[in-house]
Image (cartoon, rainbow, N blue to C red; front, side, top):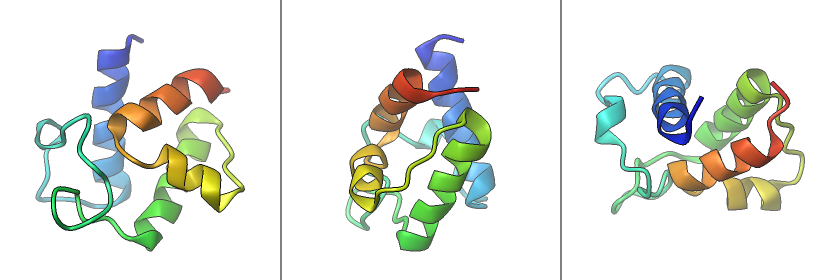
Length: 89
């Protein structure tokens, strides 16, 4: 799977896992912050836990350190880079 397909898949998974029914994958920019109300998707700390579960379940990635999680869950680009380097599934 190439990076473009992986980004599309990740966006769809985020929408499904977080039940973001009013958002479509094409509505999420690759460099759009996931957290924050200004330009971000407006996700919160509960959503970050869900995203960590998503990474574990779908890609075999385990994030135990909250500092590492904050570095990974910035935007789609950052998550994809991390997935490509660390996935086990």
